[in-house]
Amino acid sequence: MITQSSKRSIVIATLALLMACATESRAQISSYIPSAPGQAAQALTGSQQSAANSALCSAIGSHFPNPAAAGPSALSDPAVMSTAATSFAGSTSLPLSSATDMLKGYVAQHATDILATCATSNATSGLTSKIPGGGSLPSVPKMP
Image (cartoon, rainbow, N blue to C red; front, side, top):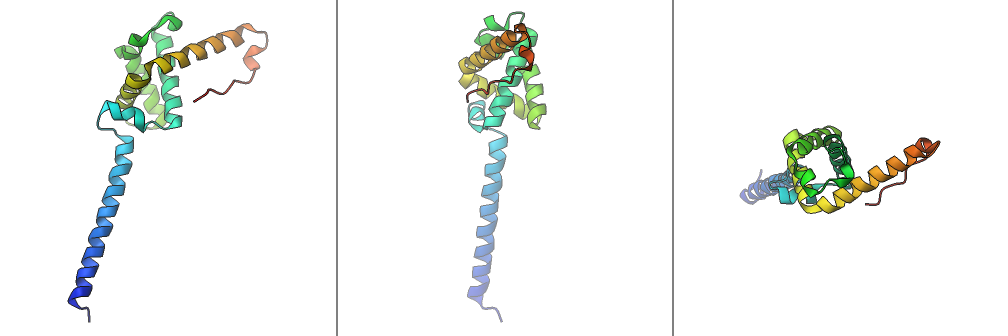
């Protein structure tokens, strides 16, 4: 026979378990779908930052005739953002709206670093293409 205090203990333990699961689920969801663009940059993992840089640099290169001269305004260009978000969403398996929000937040906080990454990437790819056999040289890993 189950006593009244045993029933209470079971109910309390069940409620505590449900609260713990709800909190864990909420934390997982919020790390993938930020509530504000300012939080988006914090949510990017190392591999997401790499994918974001790649998508943004590629988008700038396809929308600006001289990517090396592109300034911070290039990153906020709607065509660049749309192209980059589509690429970023595909490479990270995120919904397009989440990918767009994450990129906007990332760009807002790291525009200078992103442009430096793009300039470095363009400079090294242009250099190796002019060296005979340079296209087969191993790539240098990017610094985080």
